[in-house]
Image (cartoon, rainbow over the protein chains, first blue to last red):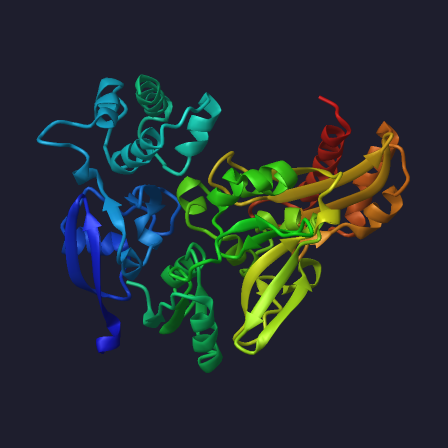
Length: 157
Length: 287
């Protein structure tokens, strides 16, 4: 059964982590169940809803369809890694200011995708903003306020 | 949990080919956006994976000395969409790449996976078919080059031999020089959806007359197809309104769409004609 275990080392929210993972698990499962980073949400489980999005080497990726063993050597950012010393990031503040949150289930993924756009210094048209956040489903509010938050933080940059 | 029994993670192509040669039962996984979803749905049991995630050097796009554009099979859709060579010489492929899935999927899904999965709805397929793309298939013993037009075996099936890995996609210079292309994806949602119909048109004209026209369709037959009948008739024709309509109608001689919950056969036939016509009009320079 030792074939089912593999040791991986990776950086999660700036901290070096080494642990033995089951090769059958997704990164989502390891982040939530082993590292207790429950800001990573499981929605559809098949890469359609975007709730499980984390940043892997700065790129938004659906962690539900990403094998845990693949994370070896990578830099992972989850929603827990954004606020510094109790202060929200600019992206998080924009979401608060625009009221872009209702139940909050899609929010961590959306905030992370937005963070990636900000960090890349993207200048996007309205259509491009919509395209870049199209991999996240919000079932509460519709998308207008989320769009407004993304636009605001990209313009303030 | 996925029902995985074992995983190999080679770091170079030769190692991957050697492992696959000795273990032909392995399931190859690249970006995982098809394989892991199939696993989640219980399609495979106790699968042994050959992961190409860590294989280096197969995610590059370059122009060879003879003008051929070479795309590594592990190139992601995001990279294709943002690549300068692709946007300059084969923008139809960039257009197709950005229509696939959503950003998170495009960040990891690979063009090689899209081809080898053999899905009739693969967004890269119609564009690559019009470009007469060639596939480089390698085993530990050697390699062969096969046109994409001859690679499909049936729904979700491709003609990969045991222990063979798709490593590169080639588009030769004569297949993109002086061509303009358009890919139209029609789906129920504007984003994050699977195509109801995909239409790719590649056109080379002189003085508004067709030198070479290629039309390829997704979700219009058991595999992605070319519309050879319409293409043949189009040669030498002037791009008049009547001729565009005739060419668009003739796509149905090759298309064999079916009823599914995503769209009926009748609606799909209508779409194939109308979308081909729209693509042709746009390439003619209307708007």
